[in-house]
Amino acid sequence: MKKSLKVTDILALGFMTFAFFLGAGNIIFPPQAGQLAGDHLLSGMLGFLSTGVTLPLVAIIAVAVAGGWQGMTRDLPSKVATFLAVMIFIVIGPAFAAPRAGLVAYEMGVKPFIDNAGQLSLTLFSIVFFAIAMFLSRSRGNLVDMVGKFLTPILFLALIVLAVAVVMDPQDAIAAAKGDYIDMPFLKGFVEGYNTLDAVAALLFGMVIVDAVRSKGVTDETATRKYLIYAGLIAAAGLTFVYVSLFYLGATSVNIAANAANGGDILAIYVAALFGPAGQIILSLIVLLACLTTVVGLISACADYFSTLTRITYEQWAVALSVACCVVANVGLNQLITLSLPALFALYPIAMALVILTFIRRWLPNPTLSYRVVLLVALSFSMIDAAKVAGFNVHAFEILPLFDYGMAWLMPTAIALVITCFMGARKAKSVEQTSQTA
Image (cartoon, rainbow, N blue to C red; front, side, top):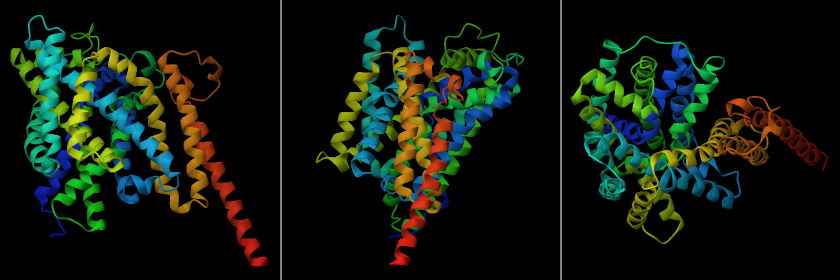
């Protein structure tokens, strides 16, 4: 068994990871955020990159450091860790993220070419799209070759063409910032980065990446972790390139896309202005490939984990999840985005807290106490943010710092972490003194 990968294999692994992350949210949210950020583009973009790039990269590294999901959650009760993983997998899999990717692929990649497109065309597309995703997902041993060496290079080339065109021929001047981007552009961009779902997905994509590395003959744990980090770095570089170009695209689209309903519309209008009729073909290629590779990664990650909990095989789970995604995708894009936002606001703080705890665990005097208290606090206060996004009356919590920006969880979670550090230290010291007296 070989214990190292060639440079081409490492690059393919990184491209595969990049492709898994680059999906629906990564394409439709940055243009709209850039348009609203306007002349506060830099601050807003840095906030978005924090949750859209930096946090997923840190999460990938955390997975590598901890040795996987089980290592990250070893200080939690096993049933709690399993429940948390199942909930995350459901959200990033058949409930929201994967169907959303399929819907974006239809709305932006196929629908513009169909006259009088309706429910029937969406249903037929969903069947074909998720059937292809199912076929690619079932061949998990060949994921690196199929996605990393074939699909992603085509996707990345199309993105480079778009980025160069945007920089060389911006369609508008950058206008003044709007809404929350006027006063708090960084925080607004930070919260908007939630929409990508990448920080949550990173915790679980790590399993698929590890399987891909091992399928290449690498069995050494240290080498596996190293390649996992390499893949994360390559993916982060690619995502940064995409977000910066799409943010700039949005910031220079104020006039030509003034009435656009969402980021997808902004992108479509802008590409049409840049390339004319051929622009829709370029955009369709980008969207279809980006969404397909992401769905493959999500289905693979979900099937891999669920197969460890049940007697159902990986291949059977891949089929079942693909069918479920196809059914949910027929809900409609706007409805699905609306339904998914509360789940995002509930899960992201938990993911962030878990990543931070993973990195500082060695310095925690009582890891079990810290993990349980900090994650409980993060969950409790994230539910307030989720309820607010869902439209419930939570004005009683307006006194919380950053409540208006959907980050009411941040200060309470940070305080809980500090308190448990001191509480744990006193407990450890007390135990030590007792043992010495005895």
